[in-house]
Image 1 (tube, rainbow, N blue to C red):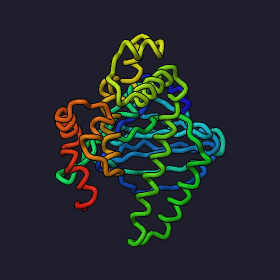
Image 2 (cartoon, rainbow, N blue to C red):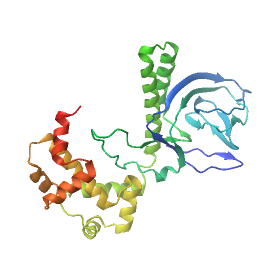
Image 3 (cartoon, rainbow, N blue to C red):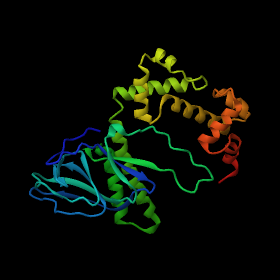
Image 4 (cartoon, rainbow, N blue to C red):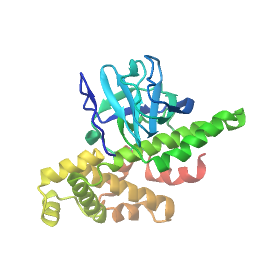
Length: 303
């Protein structure tokens, strides 16, 4: 995602919005129009998100004193409860799509570089009665891949024009796909970073040695990174220290073996690097929320 500069009396250096999910955002309405030269958005404050995507021309908007120029192939996400208005009339025909959606969960601002994209979400069990908090990340203002967005926007408008109760859920799903595309573009901006490359090397090292004890000095010798730097890079992109990530990889392999093989639990413990069988049982229970035996049977007996 390429970030466009914002201009105004109060520069805001925030890359993205973090929305707590569930609940998922809910589609309200959408539209498509061409604004002629001289047209300007009226002042408004309302309680929903307003996603603006520009296909050609330039739209000039201001939100709470910060002005944005949304050019061809760019978007702006206006937030509920914040006054917005056209900061300047369109200077040429400007084609836009707009999507209104609501969200009842918490919203926070944060720099994209602080997003722990690979942070592990706790796996639910049959005993859970509430979902685990997760997050959706959306860019505030930036460039988008219009070729990927336009089919979704057109499908959204088509469904809206002929909507029946039978297909109401389909419209909500299209919104989800659209927001997922926006998040994917946001995430793609970091893949070329040095810290991401180091994080990927550390992950690969730990995954290849899941059955071995984690020894920081040995990892440093093989990867030729300072241990603190390597740990910072991994935490930046996963939210986990090397020791924590190593544990997650071990538990992931243990769960795979429990579900896909008939190996005894004791042998599985050894295969994922636990010489102490009782310690493996305790660690698995603390991580997954149930014993290995119950986890294995849960895939068969519970629905």
